Image (cartoon, rainbow, N blue to C red; front, top):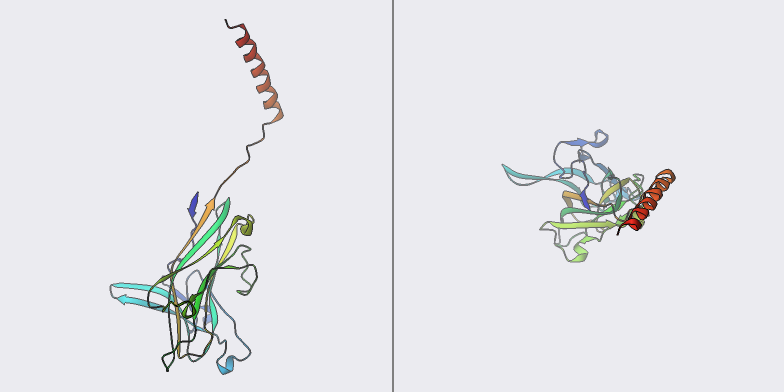
Length: 227
């Protein structure tokens, strides 16, 4: 049976909070920002990206998404959230809508891409952990121009899940070249679990088994006397 798994603020709606009180780190409630800061960040390589509220549309039909961006720099970062799974979860599928914009002054982009992943161990220490099961990259290298919404997805099977009751949802944005504009936007995340499956029959208590045996013997005797 497929069951929807509640994720806090899966649609990335306000309010947005300042992570660590830093004004450049506006994160949707329920999520935590992460990034890799490289040794050459001062030269624009693997900088701390800016997280912000992205609004699409015109009032009153405004849609809000989580944004992340760097300017004349490269970045690797995103957001994550730990989610409680329903009992008996055997496999997981996560989906999220994404868009991006990456462009330099010469008209080329920064080779920006985005993906989504699931960590069945529930860890939050590192987005570089080998325990994360990542979906496919989507971005400039895959021929997607980022102008329309695209669905990112990732899957965890029963063997990978291993009976865990927690999973960490990870979203990642990364660009290789120091383009002027490098933006990624995420919205409308959905997590589903396959629950149940083959269940071993319950063991019959010895006393009940003996009682049932006597009932069967008496039933056999009655059936033998019937004409």
